Length: 234
Image 1 (cartoon, rainbow, N blue to C red):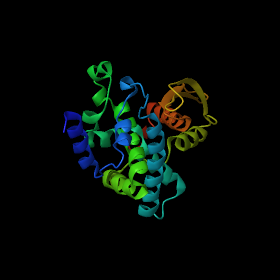
Image 2 (cartoon, rainbow, N blue to C red):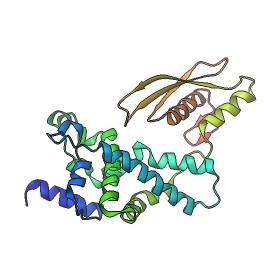
Image 3 (cartoon, rainbow, N blue to C red):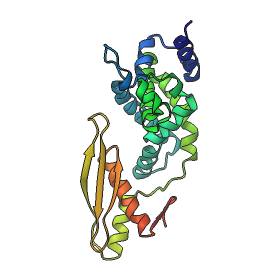
Image 4 (cartoon, helix red, strand yellow):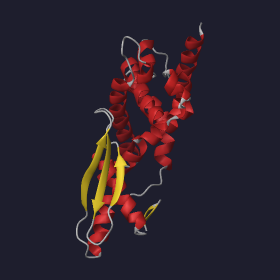
């Protein structure tokens, strides 16, 4: 067994699944900087894994919080499937050690970059789904997201709703949101949104989709005005 085989075998033990098709796992671990002649990277598997993760976590939330309203479930889901959560799981699994990176990306600390780790974690979920099926994925996600789901203490009211009520309660009218920048490839876009309300300085926020960026912009304005803490509305 060569060094690469040893690294991948150890990772499969941490994942709790032995791949019938190892090429799926290798692809999930391959960054664009390390692309060879076949051009296979983690991006397509990341696309799949993101959707599978959302589905399974949504199922877990429905089961764990039977009386929660849709809005609360949506906020819990957003917190659990965001890139930061995936990156934290990747660190627990030491995915960085097994990733295939180009020399430049590796030398610049790519194995510890949260953005890459989060993407690779989603790609691994996609690979698990294709190789082992949904039950394998459910077990994996329950193991690594179950405690996070129970321990989450974020705000149960979303920032956009809170900002609208706060602004209208002060006679400022309805906040307006505008995309001021969009960057990144189609599979991993990055939006920057600016929110404006009469009588207040604009505030901005970024995110992987428009909804996330709008929520972050609303949070930024509320925090600046002293109407939001890390625990939610104040």
